[in-house]
Image (cartoon, rainbow, N blue to C red; front, side, top):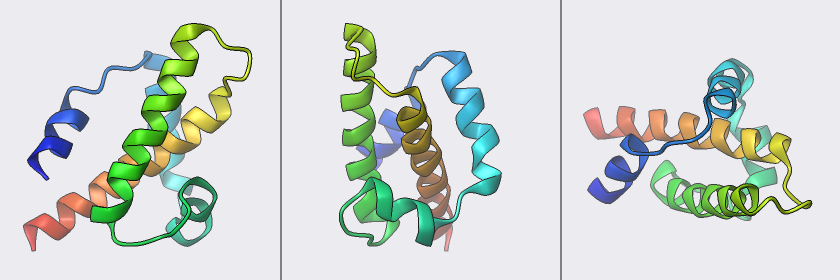
Length: 94
């Protein structure tokens, strides 16, 4: 799990994407939103790696300038990733 923390700590994305994702955290509802992003909803330990993979694919698409890139989808994944990372951190402290 330390690899996940390192990856999240070194995640560098455009400021506007990250600001939008942080703003969206207030409206995140795990039961509703996570189902759209990952196939099966499990514990944060299971979903964070899936979200990291989905976000990496979106970032690669963005950097390539591919017309299929969706900023809205990227922000949704970033919101979920940040929220799940918070849950993961809380679980680690317990």
